[in-house]
Every structure is written in C-alpha cells, then in structure tokens.
Amino acid sequence: VNSSTVACIVVAAGRGERLGAGRPKAFVEVGGRTPLEHVARTVALHTAIDHLVVVVPADLVGEARRMLDHAGLSERDGLTSTVVAGGDTRQASVAHGLTALADSDDIVLVHDAARCLMPGQVYERVVEAIRSGHSAAIPVLPVVDTMKRVSDGAVVGTVDRSELRVVQTPQGFRRGVLFAGHEAAIRRGDDAVTDDAGLVERLGIPVHVVDGDDRGLKITRPFDLAVAGALAVDPDVSAGLVDDEATS
Ligand code: CTP
Ligand code: MG
Image (cartoon, rainbow, N blue to C red; front, side, top):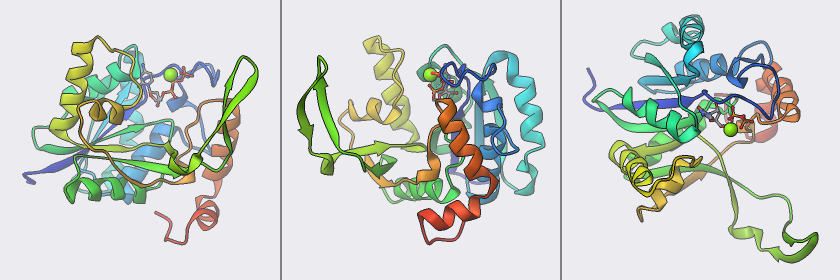
C-alpha cells in the first residue's frame, strides 16, 4: 500500500446549458464515448493516478458508476474510483469531491470532465511538478489571437499577449493547499469560483505552470462538441498535429 497517493477529482456535475444537448455534457457522446468514459480511460491507461473521484449530478451517480465499471478502469491495478454527487456550482462540486479523498491522497488534481480529450501526458506533467516541490501547478497555453480591451463598443487598448496564458485543467495541488484555498473561499463568502488555482493564488502561494495541450479544449458550446468529436475519432492524427511525443 502506498503511503502517499495521487487523486484526480473530475467534476462532471454541471448541467451543460450552453451545450444544450438535453443532458449533462459529461453524458453526451463524443466520438463514440461519453466524456466521462474518455477521462476514465485516459486516467486508467495513460497516467499513474491512484484514485479517481468523479463528481456527477445526484440522479446520475448510479449511471456514472456503471459507466466507470465498463470504461477500462480494471485494466490497471492500483486504481480505485469513487463517484459522488455534486453541488450547485463547480466550486461546490469540487468541495464534494474533496470529501471523498482517501487519507493517503497527498497530491490532488482537479479536472473538468468537459476537457475529456486532454492527453495523459499533461496529467503526468502536473503531477511531476507537484512531486518536484511546487504546491500548485496548472497547464497553460500561449494566446495565439490578438487581444484588445473593449468598452462601449470601441477599442480602448491592445493587450500585450506575451504575458497572457490560456488556463486548462487538470490543475494539481498539494492536498493541504487545495483544502486551504477552498476553506478561505468559504470564509470570504465566495461560492462560485471556477478556478481552483485562483483560490490558492489568493493565499499568496505560487502557482507553477506547465505546458497544456490543444486537445484539452473545453466542450462548452455545440461548436466545441463538433471539434472534440472529430478529434476523438482519431486521436493519433490529432496527436501528430500538436506535438511530436508519443500519443498518450
Ligand atoms: N461542474 C460541476 N458542477 C457544477 C457546475 C459545473 O461539476 N455545479 C463541472 C462541469 O460538469 C464541467 C466543469 O465543471 O465539467 C466546467 O464547467 P462548465 O464548462 O461551465 O460546464 P457546465 O456547468 O455543465 O456548462 P454550462 O455552464 O453551460 O451549464
Ligand atoms: Mg457552468
């Protein structure tokens, strides 16, 4: 038994209103599998994560449990999984996931089920950053578009994008740091914060960045679902487009 283990909390308890698919988006098909199945397979087959905590709407706990049991989790020894009901906001759902951690879960990743095609190598990069001594680490991408500040229908300035990054998940934390961030938010009365790293930043704790991956796009609107569906059909092809590492 490991004295120190790595958990990944996957939040999938949103309603998917912007997608408008008629059911929560973690349960919609993306290239033949649901986002929840994609994430479970990635974690099981392409990471060394020990504990998968999946947070879903209360009425879908049973369905999620069955889905995980058929998603290849058993293909790797040493991976356990827990399904819990989420809350009204993403922050609340993460908090519910925190209650399901094992005592040994020292490193905790928080991941959006909506980023279901994020390759395992990014999870591993985040874990490695925490193992190497960072209290928090997040995957980021450079901003490729020109960014402008706009007010009342007119441009008021051009932003220097060289310092800007797009933030993805999974975000990784030393367990105590993530708990402290969430506890401080509750004390402040914040209940709808969507960025866990932001909660940790507010404690004055440095957040390390690692390279993200374009395949980790968040399925938010129908357009994203179409893109993700195309990527999911042949991840090897998309892997060749975005990096020269082996497909994870
Ligand atoms: N999430 C959650 N619990 C909530 C709200 C969101 O677990 N109460 C999760 C979503 O399932 C998703 C991730 O947080 O994996 C990012 O949220 P978002 O993209 O906003 O998903 P939804 O809230 O489902 O979508 P929408 O805001 O369009 O309803
Ligand atoms: Mg939402």
